[in-house]
Image (cartoon, rainbow, N blue to C red):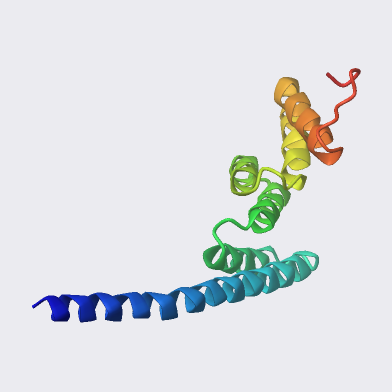
Length: 142
């Protein structure tokens, strides 16, 4: 009985060794494909084909759920179409996905300024400046 348990354990471990590298490679391939979808979305967005751009951005996010640039770009499309609430949601999702990616800070600052919410506009502007200059915010900006 013991030999059987050892053989099964060895078999399972050998399967794990073969599966893990394949999964890592698949993840990298999916991330590359997500980048391609985002780039295509940006291209059609520049042609004012917003529905088509959104479809590409959604595919990019499906392939890489932590892809901040695609969330940010979706926010820009929503803002362009006048849906500020969904734009804000997507800018915040971009920050949640990657807090070091700076464009959504700028977009949120502009969105809040447009709404007359100067406190939040200034808060996100400070975050943008801080993150853009290596965390060194001048005393005048504080």
